Image (cartoon, rainbow, N blue to C red; front, side, top):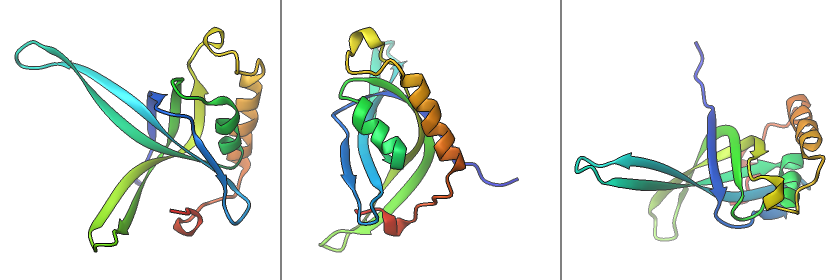
Length: 145
């Protein structure tokens, strides 16, 4: 059996996404979602643990993020984990793990966000079809950080 790298997360955007075009002309959006987990401590006290997950979207999905995803919205993110490693100026080795997104669903009701297009499901389906038919396989050289 081959390895599996697949993640599904639900969370809220901590800020508006960052959008840019890289040298190849491909669009790139980065954003962070906050994901909460509630649990009881041994003492019985209810507490919340929050994780902040960095996400990366490419191409048409990046354009969708730019146009429809805003701070505070609750979304579902599907994708794969990618570890980035680099060395700081002082020689320290560091790394981060990001989600490379291949699908997004908006959970925030339209009545709470007037900026959402009524054709959101059609657009999401078109993006998913384009992704499935794409031969794009980004490499580390494509990532500008």
